Image (tube, rainbow, N blue to C red; front, top):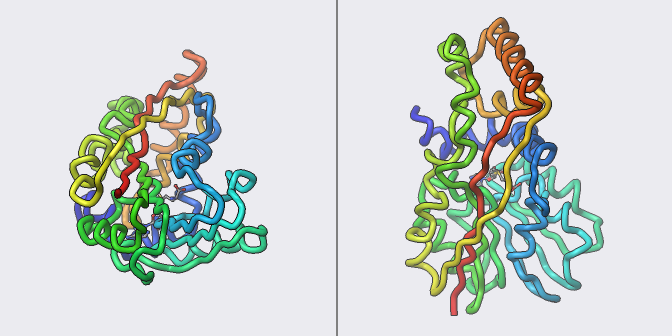
Length: 276
Ligand SMILES: C[S@@+](CC[C@H](N)C(=O)[O-])C[C@H]1O[C@@H](n2cnc3c(N)ncnc32)[C@H](O)[C@@H]1O
């Protein structure tokens, strides 16, 4: 299966890549630990929701609920927030972390392609780093449009072509073959929904579409989180020989020792799409 197809394969996403939050946590952990941004990612995304008291919100592809866990004290009163994800494991983790928090959260396992909500239910829909996993984007966006109220907004985060492009140069030539199953290359170019094409994909469904870029880069000063990041994207039927892992670890440790760290650029942002 091609990499793009695997990235949109419901069985792989549900039962392997996102069965639990551990792969996602390895990737988010690298960003959390080594980000140079002034504002953390989830609070920055939260600002674009522009929530006011009493709003009804739907998050599609909620993962373990980090958007809400990291912004708990900023949620306006009486908001009604429904978290959904294709992966039952993710929904369970979100529910375990958020239930009993005092806010009105609901949880449901659901694909964004088939939403079990009445027309015109939500003021805001969030799709935070998830539309690139969706095989039928027209179907998903028609669903988002259907469940959204008039004057509603979709906040859709994704990456662009230049996201983490330096990863490709981190593997020494002599090791390239042995570690070829690690996805050590830019993290934007292969995405079906990315910063470069998102506006054209969203415009047929919304009256206005704005793109806001997140200003960030990584300065990585430890090897193990970078290794964990690389291994979080390996597919189930592949493996990397232990000797190659050791050599990779040594090569990256030497680079960090020599340069003080490893610089990785980022290219991420949100589309805010609204109906009138
Ligand atoms: C990269 S994670 C992002 C999680 C969370 N939004 C965050 O930013 O931390 C993508 C999430 O989308 C979910 N997902 C993938 N395809 C989906 C679909 N068709 N409908 C709903 N959720 C989906 C995955 O299970 C995963 O939890």
